[in-house]
Image (cartoon, rainbow, N blue to C red; front, side, top):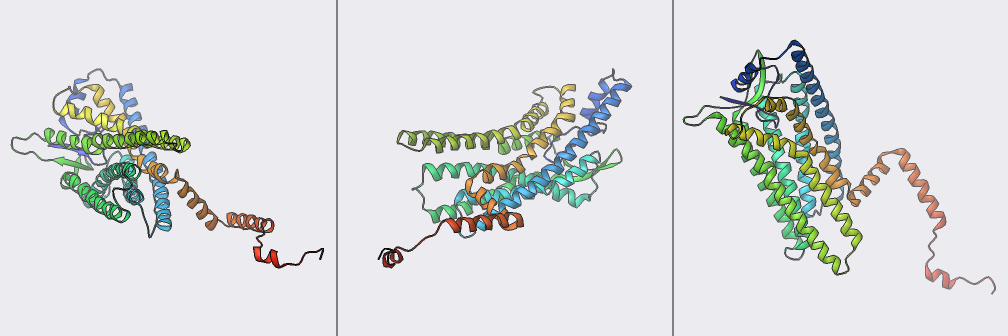
Length: 380
């Protein structure tokens, strides 16, 4: 059988645990390990686990606050009328919020040396929710890129009412497709006792004429293609076309300052997605090559999977707390809404704001024109 872990870290190597015969045979072939090497190995593993658990906890806290704030601002500002892009931002915030809620479970799992204490049902639920929202988040980022290009370059092709209906239909399709591509994870996720410890993992069965490693390779190909490569191509293409369109407008006396601002915003969005997900997807691709015997299983791969791969998972997860900042709080309307929220929620802000308003009221006095015309002059 083929065994993988659940939290977005397929085929992860667990230092010190016999997870599969391939990893163990590699360790058995390494005969020059000293007692100092073993002690360093265990210390590094413990340090890595503590680091991952702390990062998961921080990302969870920031993600919960950031995404709840975005949801509140969207509901208060766009409750009745919501553009296509804003509707996708709303769904993205819901997706990322659901995802970060699973991180405390993975933090506990990691801190306990990947021993799952929450039982079989929670293993299936948490691992499925994590995977589904990982896909949904990437899909909504892609939909937002397409919607942004269409709203700027093709504003007259679709009327406002039709675009909102289309956004709702696309959102339903994205959620449905995310559930569909998560089904393998949901079906085969389970708990299993290995080395006297209960683990939450995904176990592909042995099928006639079908190597479990081959099934695992197909699953990882799906993750790389649907979760990274195809969305990256679409996002990059949409934003490049958007920048090209804005450059054409610049020749027609468009606002160069606004174009520069859009260019920087687009660059930050694409780079953040690329930087957060590339390391994780690159190591997953390396694992795929090993599954299909393109490259051999080496000590370097074992070391990278044991220590580097979990860190790349953390980096990918930070995208869920970056999204609220990148897609909402950098926009002026949301910053103004946040300031207004602080003014209403903080007594100190309210007091300062009211004093400022009174000072303005003392200086700016508006006198109706008819009053000025009917008042007698002092000189008679």
